[in-house]
Amino acid sequence: MFKILLIEDDATLFHEIHNRLSSWSYDVHGISDFGNIMEQFTTLKPDLVIIDIQLPKFDGFHWCRMIRAHSKVPIVFLSSRDHPTDMVMSMQLGADDFVQKPFHFDVLIAKIQAILRRVYNYNNEEIMLKTWNGATIDYDRNTVTKEDTSIELTKNEMFILKQLLEQKNKIVSREELIKSLWDDERFVSDNTLTVNVNRLRKRLEEIGLGSYIETKVGQGYLAVEEALLP
Image 1 (cartoon, rainbow, N blue to C red):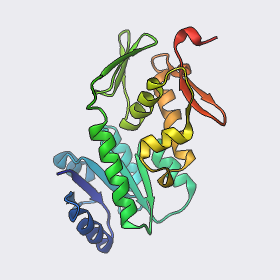
Image 2 (image 1 turned 90 degrees about the vertical axis):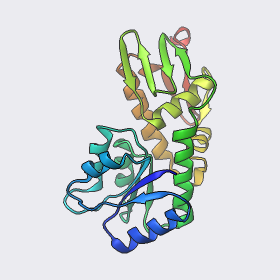
Image 3 (image 1 turned 180 degrees about the vertical axis):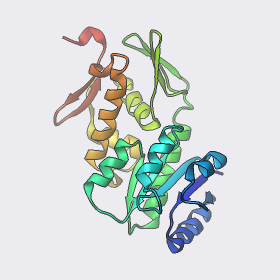
Image 4 (image 1 turned 120 degrees about the vertical axis):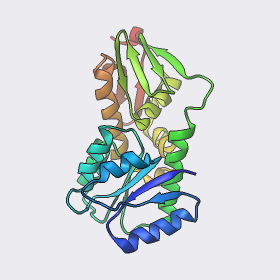
């Protein structure tokens, strides 16, 4: 049974979400002290976090930063605000998805199921290690190591890199990436993919591999081998 930490201060909405997710056999926990969320997060060790943006004392962005400093757990934002910058900020902070209130519960459940499948099932494949441009990619540990330097990627970043490496030197369309990453492209914006790819490229730059992820305007992205670079 997956443990979900639901960080929502609206009691009515909290109980509604709690009851609906519990009916799907998720183990849902709330917050008793909104000024000390990290202690409760650390104690619970949830498999997924659902967090509202507007919270008492500190907003959801603050707590997302705090969680990301210690954990790669999937995070889904909830918000009644409809400004595009909220979604962009969420993705830049490392969130896995964004759900705008009011929402249909079937959509929320579909997103949760897709994220949990992706995060906890995709790495159970036969090949866990791969070499690429002098680096070793460990799909199981979400790390990329080159020489003596190793970086850790988020689940989304590693998933995107994996999709590109499976078709290296070939363009992978944005539509294909969105569909494979979120299971259903209706629930995701183009902007969300752009933010995730840019974040992946920035992380790879730390070990000199950022330029090996190329953007093909109007087409998609590709991972290239060193010999093919000009």
